[in-house]
Image (cartoon, rainbow, N blue to C red; front, side):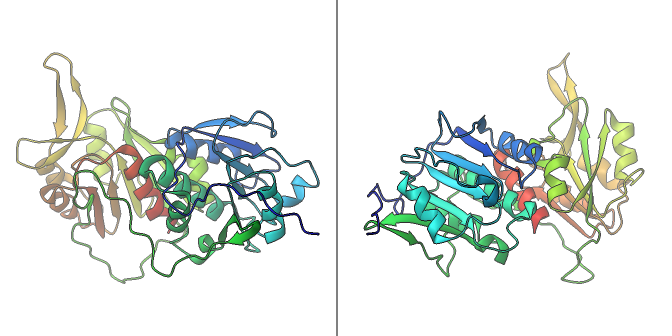
Length: 350
């Protein structure tokens, strides 16, 4: 006689765990340890490493292929969501065994290529971002995390329903994203000048430029994460206007994509400029204005992504595009750090 699954609370409504920490069980890691921890640090989610004892969080991540799990004893997973990263987890029988141990939901990929770290890492980042920062329900977070490509849509969500293991169907129409505070589009795309609509740099490389005196480089852009998506990162820094001028003229830059991780501040010409440092005597930022950017920038054929607040201002965007850029992406309105990190990660992943 088949053992019926315990009946738990439904996750198909608005249930969303309060996520400040995740339990991480590492077997033979599919996603490299540094990349996964950097991603969680970028979301300000604490990591509790465990072998399965003393679980603290409503979300448990199992990092490793199913064969490494073997026949070890399953855990007491009462009320928790289990996310498995790796190959061999996506069958209904394995899902049922976790649900019998009290798991509220079980998520894993049924793809034969689930051992690839890149898609596994991005799904985990997007899924946890939607829960931790947008307050999405588990079902909605699962749908949004799998919306980008076919490999991400292979992640299946299993729940216990009427005493049986049930796989939820992914809707044809994506769930609408959570409403943004303040409204408006967060990024202004500028005047895109593509020679071909399907243009894509190959091999994919990126120059990341940030200030040493006013650093804002996010953990979400770490080299460990970008490597999993096949992106080679070149790190650069500037400490004053002379070095920034040199980099805006393309000196030392190697890649077709340039990420400027800076802060923005209104300049005297009605646009937004890049903060160089804070003048301690007057308590005001020293700004590299957009009119100055227009005069010096020379980055022909490149795409520039600027993550500083307000640097998607139309005047600033036109100043950058004067340097014969292929395209410019900047933040038009003030956006929280997690949203801008998620935007750039999704842009680079796709």
